[in-house]
Image 1: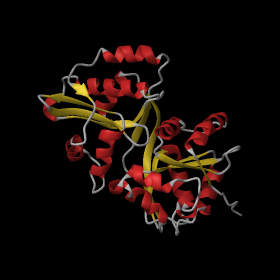
Image 2: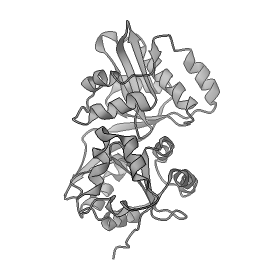
Image 3: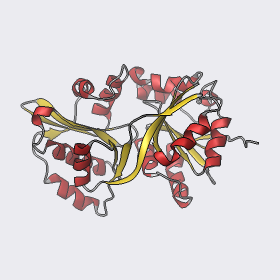
Image 4: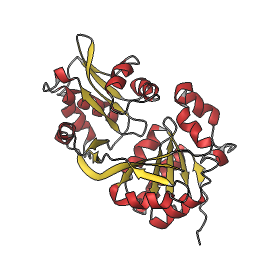
Length: 304
């Protein structure tokens, strides 16, 4: 018999307090939890705030789910308890603690589709950053509703950078900069989107937001953007790219240095990124800064 799991919404302050409990209970992959909550771009749901067994974060810009289960039973029971046919967020539509008007104003008209899909029958689910050792578990737990569950073929290395002395690290990183590196601009999103492997009908709007509303870095030569990296809504950094004709000049090192400096100056402590396990060049760049592998992950998708 399945024990029904009742999820409850908690605000950002409560989500940050919850992190202490999650660490004590040894929840896995918490490096992804803290940055997302600090960015305040997620809705947080937990079964029991005092004694949690599962936490779900929903990215308000992209609609992606990040699921943090303590064990197999919690994941399975939660998956069976959610009314996917009615939409995950539907039962929270009239929750007085959730300021929907403010949330949709922050997201904007161009990006609201990701969140809106959770207010109707769930036609597709996207679960981010599932450790490969939990891949089968996630798929089996969700098959009750999502008959067609499969992981993406790409495997990503989840890399984290632990820093003991942030101020000393900032001084070290500043040595890599010059006057041509700085933040990205709204119009840069077109250039980035055209080179982005995951370009879609929705990606340009997401990238415009990323270029203007969060931490980013770009390198320009004679005014032309030739190298860049952004911070995603989930608190990770990524999309590191240098135009082919400008590679081999150390520009990636400059933009990574700049974004890390801004990352630390904005109160974040643990940078992390997802790099394809076969992307040798990006692996080399990130590891040169001291990033180390935490786990191998995939994105998992499903349809009814």
